Image (cartoon, rainbow, N blue to C red; front, side):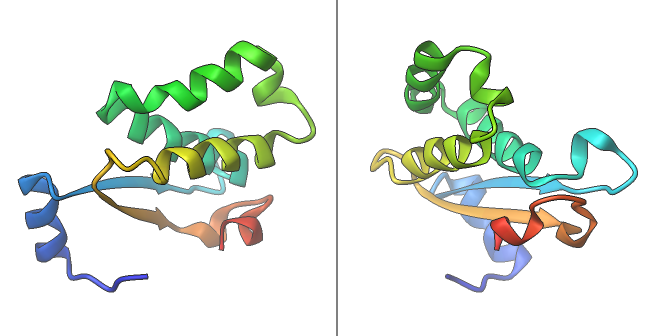
Amino acid sequence: MDRIEIHELRERVSSGSATLAFFFCQSTEPTLNNADLVLRGLTWKLVHKDSQLAQDLLEEYRATGEKLFDSPDKTNKIWSILSKILNNPALPKVYILIDAIDECDKGWDQLL
């Protein structure tokens, strides 16, 4: 795990040598306060930046449909998809920022 200063991160992201995926938790907002939503948000940020990264997500969605996001095992499934995306050799170094993780009502310990 790297420590990096904000100005250096900005420079790396601007040059394309790194990408940033971020999520801001908020306990008062039900769509921003649990681990599943954090993982979904990070996955979406990465896929949105590069549609080629959507392949792993699409494969799992085709296999399970809407159950991907509603099943009791959804956290593990989304973790698996995000891990595949992060291990894609075409993806530059990724920095993940999760702000206010202590405001996650459920599953924040799974994110650490």
